[in-house]
Length: 126
Image (tube, rainbow, N blue to C red; front, side):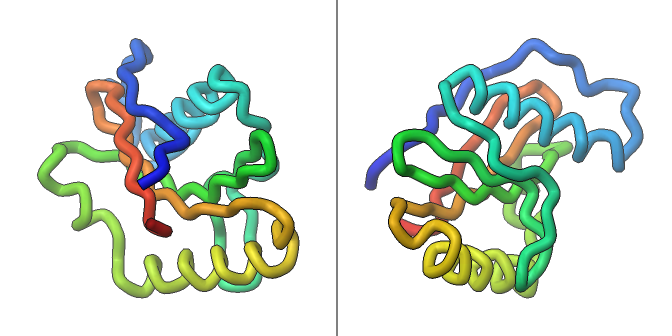
C-alpha cells in the first residue's frame, strides 16, 4: 500500500471548544499539516455532485480527497462515519477522479483527529 501522508502529533489544544468548533479545529489541523508537507489546498467544505467534501489537496499530480472526523476517544473511530456518508464519499471520489482529476492519481482518505492532536489517516482506495 502506497502511503502519501504520515501521522504526526500537533501541539494545538482542543479543550474548551464546542462540538461544532471541534470539527472546524480538526479540519484546520489537517490543512496546516498538509501545507507543511507541501500540499496545495484546492478546496475546503465544498459541495460536489454527491455531497460535501471536507478537503481536497494536491501535490505532484497526486490528489487527496479527505473526510475529516474529530475523535473524543480512539475506540470510537469508525462509529463516526455512517454507511450512507461513506457511500457518498466513494461516489464523489469516482466522479472527481473521472472528471476534474482524470489525469491525476486520486485517492480517498478518512482522517481522524483526536483531542490529543494525533492525526490518523486511513486510505479508503487501497
